[in-house]
Length: 248
View 1 (cartoon, rainbow, N blue to C red):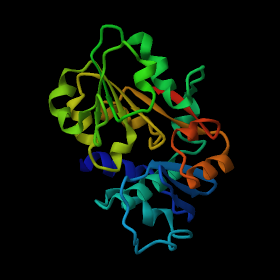
View 2: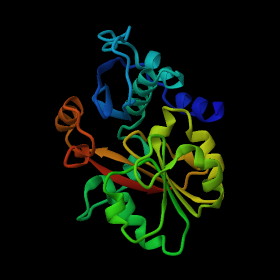
View 3: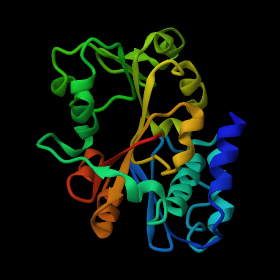
């Protein structure tokens, strides 16, 4: 695990202050030097956070290592600050191609890859609302930490992933520290690392990732408002869009 996280933290060398943190119901948002970074918010947060009200103005270099914390709220803050530090115009995001289409924005990655998946064993890590409708009639397995109807528990990864041909991995697994093992189990599959929690770095190929599918911010004020008002998939209805980059 340490190699992946050491690489991530070493990739963000800036010391700019954190301008804003919003620990929203569904997304955690950080802003550094005018850049926005996201992380999926933890499902359960203590009523009392010792650092609440103290994060704005602190050096980004001080908060990025919170990604290593086993406190879920701290890890989400650390990942969001890391992404705000990395995901600027100079990142590989500039080479990613936006994904457009008629399907809801949060499902466009799955719509894009669907023609390539016929006859393949496909695993999706993380529950994406509406995917069961988009892929109706197409067999796939969904692994989820908090399983819903039809999902497998995340513990099934040990048996399911080594048999997969394609794996779609939510980048929120960075915060809960499961990503290194998920990538190791998926080393024989084509891997798509996806979601607003994604750090845009070309070096993901060394860890077995074939495609990056993260977000490009289209409307920063709208993104701030959606996060602050508890939005989930609504983040993709204007504030951000998915973009895709194939790694060589």
